Image 1 (cartoon, rainbow, N blue to C red):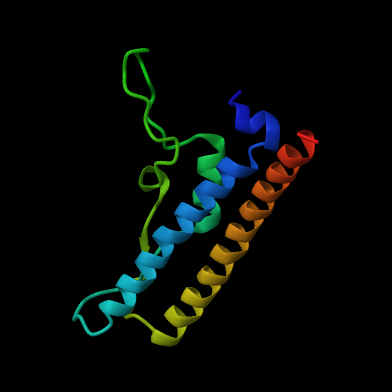
Image 2: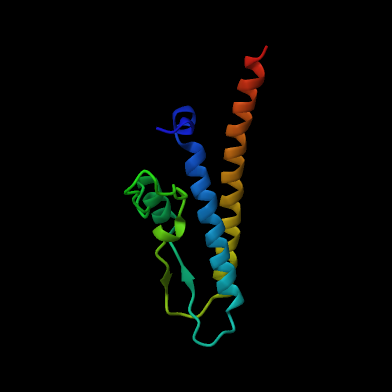
Length: 129
């Protein structure tokens, strides 16, 4: 079990996964908006919840079959994302709603991680006294 998981119960690593998934979703939404006038383009999306569930279960990772292989990034989201296309044109109002929600959830996750680090800093500062 990694040190971080022992100390914080995996909150930091799951927060990292969540931030990366939110960042990827933001790019996808922006791509939808950028292609709103493109003929034949249909809206694309992925389920944040299923990405998190797969990442926390460890699915989507490549297996290391030899100890000499390079350790891969544990957060390889592109392997666990299943993009879906609704086969319908992009609705600007819907995309703007998605982008607002995604930004809000990104900020909440970032603040949660910042609080964890503040707690660690306080523990270090108080431990020295």
